[in-house]
Length: 247
Ligand code: 6GU
Image (cartoon, rainbow, N blue to C red; front, top):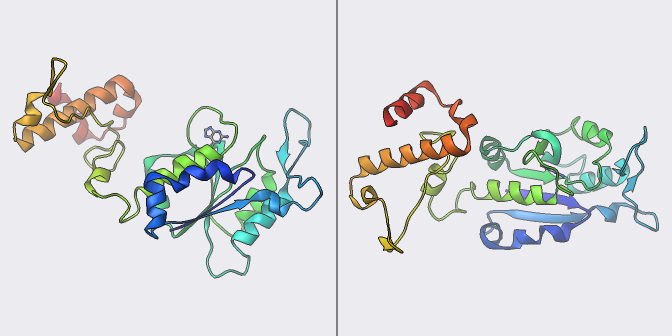
């Protein structure tokens, strides 16, 4: 997969060199290219923002540098067309479902903004030739979209074939489709079996895989009820049934 990111703070994306995403890049599974938006602003101050029409606080990112940057990354006469992701607190929610969808794309371009956002016409213009999604990573406001890009790239990269050592660790994720859909993962334990007087739940040492799977599911349901009661309402009838039997 290829990922381009256009930003006035490409150095904010330095963590993409580290850990899982860094290793995926080193293995050639992920081709990440960072671009400085200001390289497309040609006045002496390399200006990328201006005051908002209609008044109000803050600044708005100008259309010309963004259009030039996006067209340099993905030329209008290019052979393929990327999917454009614009991080913004006004976007659709970023979910595991969207991460799975994005992980199947060959090419993503991220356009994280600073200030009050990008002139609307950039998004409308891009949408005439590529799929554009405005995406939010949660109900709070960041100073810019770069951290949201880190979040989304990490969530997508770990789903790419060959990135995780153990493909099963994706299967059991909180929010993963399947038996654990819409459930939070429960607690996990490792050695020693007793630590500071606290024992690992005996079922995990029992070797009874059916009993372990049931216990994990019950724990997941209990944790979901405690931390995310809203998710329980999305459980299917069959899952709710298991929940009733578990309680
Ligand atoms: Cl994607 N950007 C910004 N600036 N703030 C956010 C966000 C994105 N998602 C949640 N808050």
